[in-house]
Amino acid sequence: MHDMYIWLDTTAQAVTLGGIPFAAFYACAKPYIRNMLLLKSDYVGAHCCKNFELLCGQDEIKAFLASEDLRFGDFCFVDFADGANPDALTPEQVAELLYVAHMWSPLRGIDFPPLRNAFIYLSHDDAHTLKLFYTNPAAARDVLLWLVQFPLSQRGGAPMPAFPAPTADALMELLQTGVLVRAVDGAHIRLTEVGKTEDMDALWNRKNILAAPVRTLSLSSEGWTIV
Image (tube, helix red, strand yellow):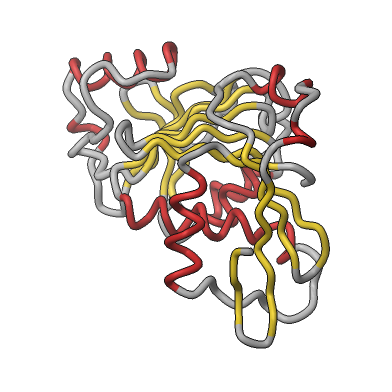
């Protein structure tokens, strides 16, 4: 992972992301993604409900991660909680799930009570483009903060300390402007304010990115700060 793009839209309870493969997202969202109902995928698992493939439990999700299904095309899913009942989805709710996977926009809402879902995940070509809807703002906050740190955590060494509350609050506010995130070294993360967009091709080709305002997350003995 190199550059990541994150734009948080708190009004729509949505996040637009680029440069983040599903494996990285799942590593950060694992506490919240217990099971998956696949909305768009060629993967065939061991369980099916309402003509949707289901991945039940972390072992089945790990098997899916080891497959080749994620590389190209659309991959969409909605998670469901342990003890939830996908069989209880109404025909109208099934239609709404199919709609959001096709249009990348909810028809009525993003919360499906029979699933008790935390997220709706919509991606194209894995790391190219990701649209994420969230029903639990606290869960979304956790995942986004972990994602920002994720490239550093992959370098090995001691675990990264969590962002202190003031830094986390400032970072979440900054993500609402549309930010390009890059780990510079083990103690610095560059945050480039490139603006709100859903067009990843245009974003990566922009010539004025280098001229955009830049902030830096810096790690010192006193913890993380934004400068």
